[in-house]
Image 1 (cartoon, rainbow, N blue to C red):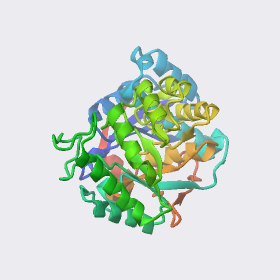
Image 2 (tube, rainbow, N blue to C red):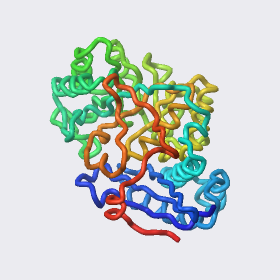
Image 3 (cartoon, one colour):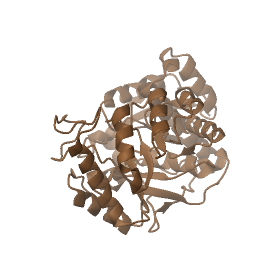
Image 4 (cartoon, one colour):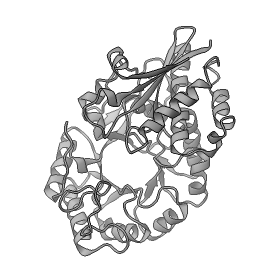
Length: 398
């Protein structure tokens, strides 16, 4: 079997919102089997770089045997010069190809990917409602007041979720998102002023008041620096926080270790850490309690599984990061169902959006008890619809 071509798709061409625009690929073979993958740059400001990376790497794999996924990874990693340099865009391109190759492999052998990774360790995957500061509904909103945060949590609980994740510092008191406009009255670095501390605590307290048993994950998107992150964690740790995500620059294990040493809440990070080489210093310095590799930017299913196995030797738990399209969701489920150190699955608010769901054939969402199960179809169990492919095709690399 040989790879004959690779199609690149830009979902942004068919979605009405631009804050999540997945980039996906389809690898085609001479035996009629195709595999789907996703570039982990659906959000942020690297969209066209992701499309270009998919095109560049696809040119190098045409004619190769798709079942030899490790050999293809080695070629892209070692023979492209920039491959060994790593980074967000390179690793995302590698990821899309690797996921698609696993999809082909599963379809070729007639089994779901998780069976080839070792089988089920986890029959059910507990999920949490992610990013409720944007509300938990079909449309996003900019939440500022504590009661709004409580209402978003109530919506998630009503759907069966037993855990939620919130960024309590991202929106200012006026509802201004920090990545969009920095508000001088809403300082998030250095020693935090009283107005910020009080509002953040009020938002978290409102969520806690919804349920004594609800697990609350704090997400900071690295809006804070080391001193602010330590100050904030110690100000709210009596609220029973499950873990503390990206409290500081995600590639700085020294700062992350300092935070971990000075707070009681477990520390998590990983969506902006790439591959075994990226995670290694965090493991060796014991800087993290939970890792959050993204299958679509960590290096694909192959590399993510290796990272998770490394984490297990350090007794570190895993919550795979999911913030993309339905292919990202499916790929994550296959890794999570296999690994013994799985903690919880991320069900992102993007996953509620009908426009994004309809780009692919299947809709995998938690049941009424807040649990997911891995797809049982051959491969990853997810494919782009024909209608979406016709609308979003960027190019075919032959």
